[in-house]
Length: 319
Image 1 (cartoon, rainbow, N blue to C red):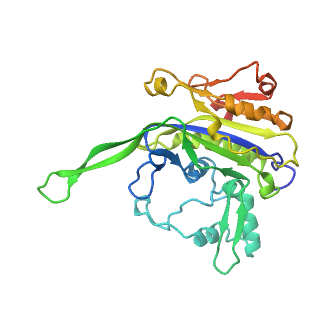
Image 2: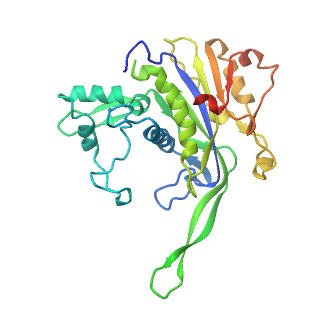
Image 3: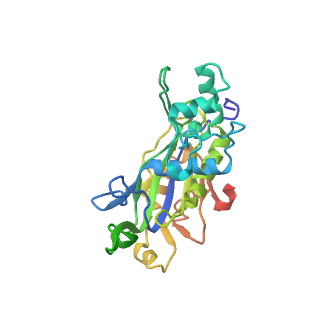
């Protein structure tokens, strides 16, 4: 599958924006509280990559045909039920999926050819009796930061059972954010591993990013995609990174939005001023968002040349 003819050639940068209302965008390993630095909410890239992988796993993965395999995904051991929490090792999964190939090199090539998550994000591959390999994936995501002054709220909850028979039922607590709007930087550099990332992988990434995040719904996990921006740089041979972009957009109506009176309004003046400086290097700028839920604020006259490069889409156009 991988090959020069249908692989991504251009460099991309972008921003991905999500919103979590009365939920936990990314819990820590101590008490599952929303991750934060001194109360400032943040998230890791791994929670978003998991959304992408889970979406691929649930929609197009075909283990029997060994197609669209999500390699970095938990696999239950034989005869185990989901509630048993018993999973295979990385070596076991690798050997099972690619047992039909003779040499390790053939198996590893098959892994790259049949695993879109490996072609997207790369990974470290340490298998027994073989030298370790590492692929620095073309698609990289930053940690996410909240731009909505989100507050962490602790809620008292009750369990249905008591610790001891005849005692009152157990009390506990959980932590959520009131309203976190999280922004991530996206970098797509095909030169990290030439001819690995396919154009079809990039389309799948955008769809899985948006709808995979929306699909993770539980009492605490209920984050929604709000905006995806992808800037395509013009020259195929150009490796250009213009710095982090995620904090160049601002929520201009924090109070009104938190009160539920208005949709999200994002001021893009700082972002567009920076992009204007690189206008001649930009091929196109793709925006994906629902115009009923979000408004982008900017001066159309000041950024008219930049606007000519805009491609605005609704989320349904990713499908």
